[in-house]
Amino acid sequence: MSALTFLLVCSVDAKAVIAQLLPGHKLNFRTVDIPATIAVARDTPNGTVIFESPSLALSPINSSYQCFSDCYLGVKNNVGDTTPKAVIFPIANTGISWRYRNSNTGNFLRGYPDVFDKAGKYGLNNDVLSIQLVKTGDIQDGAKIPAGVLGYRQVEEIYILGIQTNGSAITPISCETPDVRVEMGTDYKLSDFEHPAGVAKKVYFNLRLIGCPSSVKNVNYTLKANTQPVDASRGIVSLNASSTAKGIALQLFDTNGNPIPLETPQKFADYNSSGGDFQIPLSASYYRLPSESLEAGTANTEVTFIMTYL
Image (cartoon, helix red, strand yellow):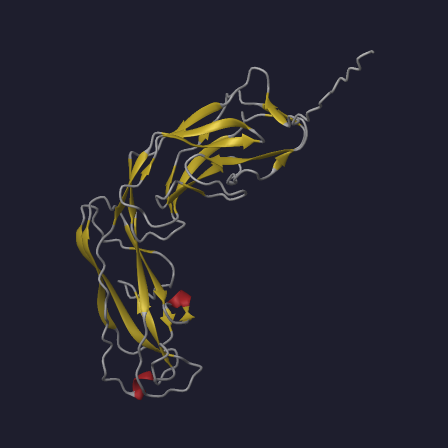
């Protein structure tokens, strides 16, 4: 009796290599210096850039790579989540994010996977980068940007560049800014508003800044109407829904008596960087709407002021 032998051949599909570093090339690192401490006002609007590094030229750098077919590129965040195609990369739960700017083009590199290179050989020798830190949420007490790798430039499964920092402590700061109630008075007559687009008497008031720390170097303030603006460029806001007067609005003026554009930062020129208490003198006046009939009644409105500390 003869034996019958079977030879079983198993085939395993190997994943094709789409990109790889060129011979003699490797993952390189570049360090971006950031201040050891960065002061950020608690009420700084989200989206504000709180630091931008000087531009850093990558040349010479042996991080060239080859794509054997179309290969995807992008940034891999090392200190938080990476969202594909996003330009903002959160730094854990600090309320701060970072982004990578190509200084040659001014564009921000986006999260992996993003764009792709066609088959060919590529390198970074002409690139110039800078790093921005952006406030994207509430600043947590004790927040820190860790020393080490913020993220990588990624091509398919390989990293070609690591971006490092020396780390920084984020210090939330602010001045105390109490609410302001402006009494416009009750001794108005309809004859005070006989001229269309005219204003009645001005009422003067102050925005107060209390206990400003010395780490605040400059102060900007921005006024935002809580009601529908009549003319944002001239600081004219409509009355609120509970007002019964008709044909008038409210106009706001700066220290020099000029109308204050709404939602436009205004520098407080008299601020002293040694800190302390300050007052920003402003004024308000009722404004006669030229296109509406005039009726007596109550005339109230609300405006929010936003302080920005630099």
